[in-house]
Length: 387
Image (cartoon, rainbow, N blue to C red):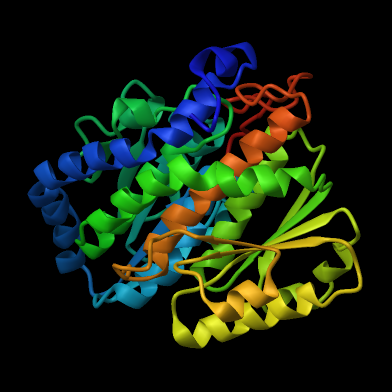
């Protein structure tokens, strides 16, 4: 995997992270079978809620990477739904500290809890707050842990349902990788009733096998800062990409995210000779123009930084503007949209972060040597809500 033997990865304390990135296409196939088998039950649950109410609010929630699932999905779910549904992404960390600012008592609400462990204090507390404040409250738990508190709490509740990810998606490493993409696919499938494009799995397998050809060259440039850019849902995906780099390098690499258009409004000041910029190029012809504009602008900066473009397929315009171009397909079969590209782009970001961690002499499975961050968050005090 990633040009290293299993023994080398174990010795470097990277075997879990590498395996969990590498296995994703296979786990997606297993997930597709699970969702197909449960399709009728899941559709009936959601449709029954829609039928009861003229308008439904769907709050996609989690903390950290789990929160970014909702951020990434809201634009595409909003575009692709034909129901009277309002999709919002609100982190559990926001709801717990300010419930009255985010929860609406008289609006029928489906809370979608994304959780790898299902035991994070904020996730459990968010459910209790929703149950207390929202009159007509429904709960969908999308989790990797059947024994987590969130999954346990839905048992016997006719207004709640739990969707379990394949067992391998319950990442053992600190950073979420398989868990992120599996929960992303599940929520997309649930609220659009569409199955994942099988071409994505094929292209993901191919990408994982060849990605180090690009990453070895990129890592030869010893960047200390990295900016991930994109538009629409890919702008939201860039938040997860930046977090992977920050987590796996224990903060040694400064990683930020921004939209392609928003980068000019201040964040571009981060650029120096030790910077790398990654642009997630959209498939949409209109949106793509803005991604290419920032790609060209950054490439023309008077600095020794490097620019990396991730794109569905390579073309002369992108090649001329970037130091490295990573096409995520072979260009023969076109993908449906940016959702499918997001699944492929994030694999590259995960692999780059892991290999940068190794380059810095860190241990990707547990890069936080001082224990400042943990697989399941610690040190959180949940206060009684007594209003």
